[in-house]
Length: 210
Image 1 (cartoon, rainbow, N blue to C red):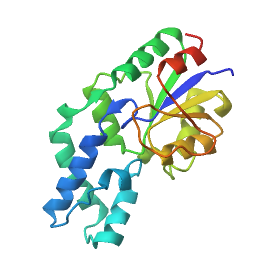
Image 2: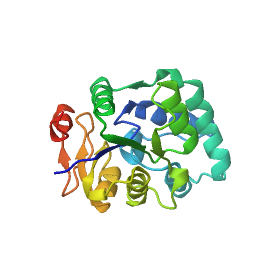
Image 3: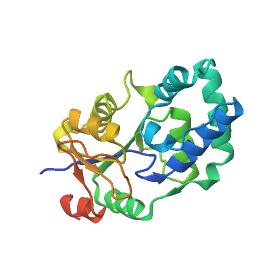
């Protein structure tokens, strides 16, 4: 398998930030008098902010416009951004791939503001770093468009890419893009047909010939 690029989901895959997204969402809901469900993580993991907003409108009667809602959530998230960290094994693989010339990109359902804030806070951005946010595409995951855009930006064929994901929606996007797709070890997400579950990030290093 001629792997030329590894495409990383950001939240919950490369960066340990899902807990902050969930907490910020719950806090924003509570500020509006809404009670977050106990299974909030399972309900919104992998969802783009616009889809979370639609869900809140439909199930909770949220009457805020999207811009007002996302400001509330962002304000909480950005105040607490110091709580995020990279997953150590993922970061080790990230560094190994950088040193060997395997192309990489970050492909996220988060908006551009959050992608830049996360990567910048953790020192993962540089002048050549490719990232695709929800703002960069018409359709977010589970649509394949974000991953196909990343492959195009890297000038790599979709079939030569590995996708690393922590959500079912993200894994479906990778599969629909025609890419070899893995769910990472730390996720409880359902495994879509056609995807594989990693036991260790070392498996990716072996596939890439490291």
